Structure formats: C-alpha cells, structure tokens
Amino acid sequence: MGDLWIKNVRVIDPAAGRDEAASLIIRQGVIQPDGSPIAGLREIEGGGLIAAPGFWDMHVHFRDPGNSLAETQLSGAMAAAAGGFTHVVTMPNTVPAMDSPEQLRRQIDELLPVRILPSACISAQRGGHKLANLTGLINAGAVALTDDGAMLADDDLMRAAMQQAKALNSLIMEHAVMPSLANRGIIRDCPVAHRYNLPIFPPEAEIEAVRRDIALCRETGCRLHIQHISCGESVQLIRRARREGLPVTCEASPHHIAIAAEDITTDNGNFRMNPPLGSRKDVRAIRDGLLDGTITVLATDHAPHTIETKTHGFLSAAFGVIGLETAVGVSWQIMVEQERMDISRWVECWSTAPARLLNQPAPSLAAGRRADLVLIDPQTEWIVNPDEFKSLSRNTPFGGWRLKARALMTICDGRQTHCALRNTGRTTS
Image (cartoon, rainbow, N blue to C red; front, side, top):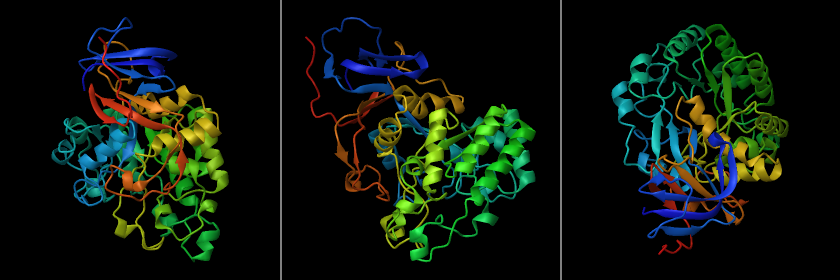
C-alpha cells in the first residue's frame, strides 16, 4: 500500500468518542500518533471525506462451498472491500453446511481482502433435529451460532442450544421465521401480490418466532440476536425485552429500511427475500428502532444468486438480494439524510456495535492500531449499476438508484483492499 497521509479528513471513531477534522498518518500499515508527516508519504486530500473504522457486516452469504457461480469467498470478499467492509460474518448455509470444525476452519483465509469471521450451524446439517458440536465449533473459531435461512423451530432443541451457548458465552443468531406460519408465503400483503396472485407471507410468521425466542432468552439467559427484522411488532417486542434487561439484540438490513411492499410495482424476483419487505408502517417502525437504539446493528444479509434464479418473477425466484456494494449509500441516504441519524451513530451501527456483539475488540483509528478503515465520500452522487459490481451476482433491488455516500478506499489490516480515488495524490518531500 505504501505510507499514507490523509489530510483534513473528518475522523469519526465511536470507540474513542472522536468526531473531528484531523489528519491520519499510516506507516507500515500502522496508524501513527498526531504529528508532522515525514518525507515519502503519499498525500490524499481528505477535505469533505469521512474516515471511519472499517465497516463490519455480521450477516453475509458467500455460497462457498456449494454455489460458486453465485459467489466465491474471493468475489464476496472483493465486493465487501468495495463496499467499505473489513470484517464479515459468513453464514453456514453452504453445501455442505458449516456444522463441523474442519469445514469451519476452511472459511478462514487471511489472504483475502476482508477478514472472514465464520458463524456455524446450531443443528447438524441445519436439519433442526439434533445439535451440532457447538463446543467444537466455537473452539474452531465460530463467532456465533445460527441456522440462518431456517429457524430452529423445535423449542426443546433451541432451549438446549441456548443453554450450551450461554455456557460458552456465544451468541445465538436466529432467522426468526416460523415455518408453520409462513406457509410457503413469499411476499407480504400488497397490491402487486394480489395482481399476480402471489402467496402471502403473514407477519405473524416473524412476530411469533421473535416472541418464542425472547421467552427462551428470558429462561436461559443466552445472548440472542434476531436477524433481519422486517415487522414493526417485532421491533416492539425487542424494545420491551431490552427494557426488561434481557440480552436481546437485532439487526436491520438496508432493503428493509428503504423499500416497502407497497413500493413493488412489477413481478420482479429481485424483490423476493426472506423475510419479505414489510409494509410502510413496518418500515417506519424499523427506522424508529434504529433511531432510538432498539436496533443496534445494520447488516446486509448479502445473498447472491445467479441471474437464472432471479429473472423469472416472484414465483420462481430464489429468496435473497445482494447488498455489500450498496450498503453505505442506501443506509446513508435513508438514515442520515432522510432520518437525520447522528453520523457517529450510523458509523457505530456498521462497526463498533457488531464487533461488540461478537465479543471482538472494538475497531478504532487510535494511534498504534493496525489500519482498518474506510474513506467515504458522502457528497458525490453515483448511480447503482449492477454490471460494475465486484460480486458475481446482480440480484439487487437498487439498480438505477441515485445515491451519495460511497467507499473510496478500504484498508484492512494495514493493506489497501479497495481504491476508487480519482486522484491518488502526491508524495511528501
């Protein structure tokens, strides 16, 4: 990468309580104390830009192994770096599923342009019938336990999993959709669902799952994280649980804060996801949950699929949308520009908050730390063009959107992993 001097940049470091105009000097991959730069540094003019700790996404699917046409570890990592991310938590619904220590260790590759923190299955083969080797998986490096893509619906098995996770001080992450209530639904009740006679996904499928999981959290004391909230009533249940003092957290995905079911106008498979887009009332409740701190984390649920599986309408489309390369722009537009969220809080939702939940050291731009940072341009408008993505997949609902904030540079563990700066600057003498 070479040594850098990023001048006159807005430094936002939630872990240090820092939000100020300053300069950042990076030498040999390490952030230096404030002081005069020396010769040989590459200068970058940071006026109007934001420097923040590299972003963390605690919910991504890289499809590797099992579906390398949709995404590989390398292509997913490149997409993450282009989006401003330095750490991602991969989900275990690969083929085979990540239910053994040996398979889990294969996910960790320090040569990739992003740090992969793998999660592991709760149940063997994600089958929901018996527990995986949770102790072995945690010891092998799993940062959380989840059957993401499928809820662990057996109350007794989930209780046993939470008891073990509590003893291991591990986080349970739950895909809270009760299969018996979802009843093969694929879209929430909205005009386009009736126009094309699409099966309705009732909100109760999520709400009752959240209610069940909170009850088991209360019983076991296990740390519980609800993934990709889509219903306003789910937000209310989690708000009450947190006020009660229960160790319950949840995440919101950019698509669930940006688009409502009523906004879908065509039979477009790029709008099919699980859980589905909520109503406008749900979207309002999720935004309010982020603003009042009920929802502490933003996460993409980056779910790549090949073109063939997403271009034939809702009924034949696979569940899921990609989001790593649009996350900064979409969440900035919705939460910072429209909802006036404090920028430091926005950065925290993408960095220190997920790290805290995963029991990882807080990312920071403090002197002496290995450089993990993202340089963001919050002003220049850009248009989402899926053909330019680093991801192998194109299944985004945001194609053609005009956004502003975008990662211009990502540095992971002292290595430059992404650069879209037009002017790379000059060298100090």
